Each structure stands twice: as C-alpha cells, then as structure tokens.
Length: 86
Image 1 (spheres, rainbow, N blue to C red):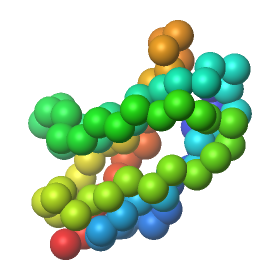
Image 2: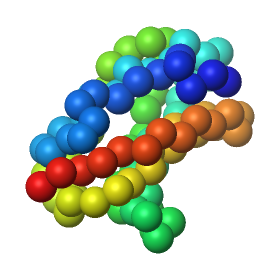
Image 3: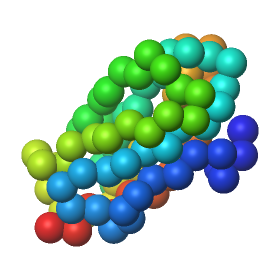
C-alpha cells in the first residue's frame, strides 16, 4: 500500500492526532503507537476504514518521536513517523 493513502494531522501533535484512513477491502484494523525504542504505548482497534477519520487522544503520551502503525487483520500495514511536542 502507498503511504500517501493515509494521513495524520497535526504532526507535530500535542493532545490529539487525526488519522485519515485508507480505503481498503478489510473492514477491521488496529492502530499501534510505538515509541522510539519500539515499545507499544497505545493501541486502538478500528471497525471501519474506507477513508474515514479517526481521532486518537495523546493526552497521556509524553513528548518524543513515535511511529504509528496501521495494520489490517489480513496483514497489510503502513507506518508513519509522529512527533509529539509537549
């Protein structure tokens, strides 16, 4: 999948992140937020993709560099770098 098929805003982020999801055949996926050491710090399950927007709260996330991974139940995945600026 092309990285351009999904987007995150704002980046750098502070309290929230808006994720615009790609249009995939799969209807369920998981968003994983990993810190720079590779440890998962946030996980959210999604039931609908199809180009919808999803809001993630970053209220409990410390400032730093993170990687947001979108993975479907069939194994497709995309990753984007996220900067949390607090």
